[in-house]
Amino acid sequence: MQHKLVALMPMRHSSERVKGKNYRPFGDGRPLFQHMLDVLLDTPGIDKVLIDTDSPTVFEICRRDYPQVLLEERPVHLRDGATPMNNVLLHDTTVVDSQFYLQTHSTNPLMTRDTVARAVDLFLSKYPIHDSLFSVTKFQSRLWDQLTRAVNHNPSILLRTQDLPPLFNENSCLYIFEKRTLEERQNRIGLRPLMFEMDPFEAQDIDEEINFQVAEAIFNARAKAKANEAKEPANVA
Image 1 (tube, rainbow, N blue to C red):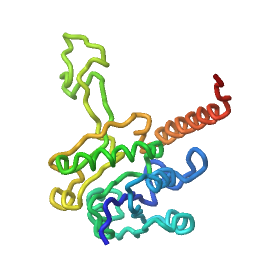
Image 2: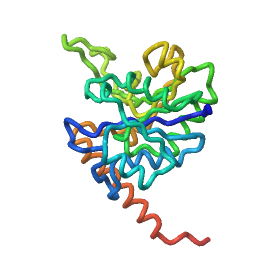
Image 3: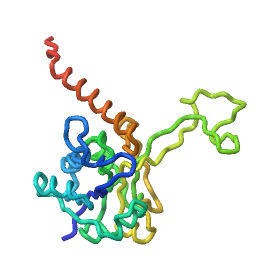
Image 4: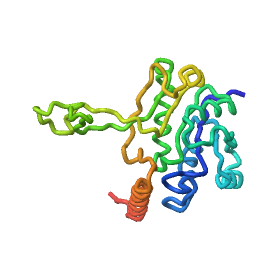
């Protein structure tokens, strides 16, 4: 059976810089990976979710709480931390057949259902004019290279940073692609990609301990604001 859109969320058991981050409690106490998993399962248009992992902890939680999720034990030859992600994805696309694949990471816990749904809708509305989509964050700052040469501005013309021509950072939060693109180009990004701009708060990626703490602070602040809004009495005209 071929699906329309399958979400892939690969993750390793061990982490070099933030120990056990994928299953470490985050925000409301759920393990980190469950935040993104719950979003994927709640997003319209995603037919199935596949988790590729070598983590017995993740396997145990998913088997107990997420019977609808497809689990793939990562082959030994793909478990090294230096293994390119595209090699992992090439394996994953052989496990479940789909016209399109959406790939994200467990380390993007602030990305919302609405954002993922907008990306899916945008890509499907632009296909086949665009053959892939990747998420970006707008970046406006004065950049210099290692030889002290201005990259994106003229030092003689002091523009405000908000007036600089924007650059876009590939934030690794979200990719949508065809299996053919991945096989032919060994890349998730095709020949005619579509950039999908994200809110920088949602694009927080947990790579270092400071990233974990910042993302958790944002999560808790938003949860508190939402709780306060719910307590406010409705205005009566």
